[in-house]
Image (cartoon, rainbow, N blue to C red; front, side):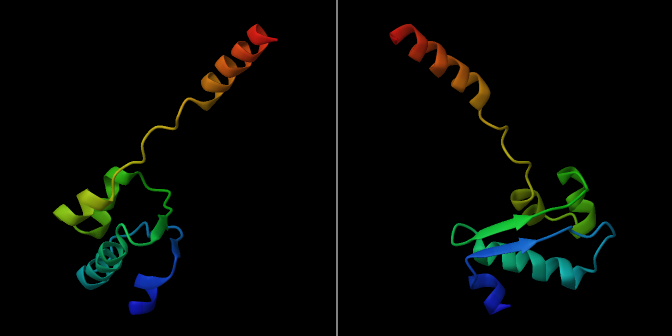
Length: 90
């Protein structure tokens, strides 16, 4: 577990669709908590984040760490505005 806690980037691909046992859920949360604000962790799943509590156990830790990502920044809008500004200056 120490190696998983210290690698620069940990990728957990395709988080299980079935409910995991309490030991597995606790170990996964322990790894995530050890890495929190120290190293990058990427988790993919085809299940909505709202279901992760059901899969990993309904604990406060799951709800704290399994939150949906923020909405993407409005880059296309910003790019369009920057192009308009550049065209006005030209």
